[in-house]
Amino acid sequence: MNGLLHVLEFAVPLVEAAGITIIVSIGAFFVAVTMGLGLASLRHFYTTPVIRWPIQAYVELFRNIPSLTHLFILFYGLAYLGLRLGSITAAILGLGLIGAASLSETFRAGFESLHHGQREAALAVGMSPFIAFREVILPQTWRITLPPIGNYAVQLIKDTSLVAAIAAPEIMFTARNLVVNTFETTLVYTLAAVIYLALCLPLSRTVRYLETRAATPR
Image (cartoon, rainbow, N blue to C red; front, side, top):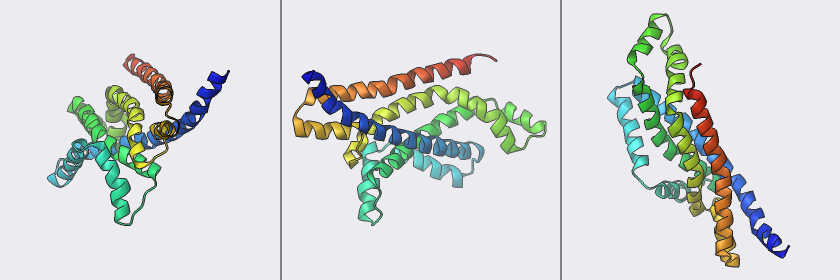
C-alpha cells in the first residue's frame, strides 16, 4: 500500500502536466498544419520568385536550425526586445512554426504527386480555381499526406519535451523538478515514459486506422 501511495505521489503531478503537453501539442499541430498547407499552396500555385523565395527561405531557416534555438529566440530573445511571451504560448508558436516548415514540404510533395490534368479537367467543367482546389486537389492530397502528417503528430507529442527548456510546465519539466526535489530518478522518469506511451500509442493506432480507411476504395 505504501508503495502504491509512493507511486501516486509522483504520478499525479505528471498526469496533470500531461494536460499541458496535450494543449501544447494540439496548438502547435493546428499552427503547423494551417501554416504548412497555406505555404505549400502559395508555393505550388504561384511560382513567381517574389512569393517562392521568401517561402523557401522560411522553410530552410526553420528546418536547418535546431528547434531549441528557435524556442530560445521566441522566449528569451523577444523578451529582450520587450515582447514577453508566456512559456506555453512560446512553446505552441515555436513548435508550430517549426512544424509548418516541415509540413509545407509534405503538402507540396502531395500536390506535385497529382497529375496536372485533374486540375485542368476541373477547370474545364466550369469549376473556379478555388473550387477545383477544394473539391478535387485537396481531398486527394490529404489522403496522400495522411501517413507523414500522422507521424508528425506522434513525433510532436514527444518533441514537447523540448519546451521544458523554456519552463513550460509539461511532463519533462515536471519530471525534472520532481527528480531535483526527491532524487527518485528511475521512478519519476519511468512514470514519464509510461505517460508518453499512453499518449502516443493510441494516436499511432488511430493514424493507422485512418490510413487504412483512406486507402480503402469507396
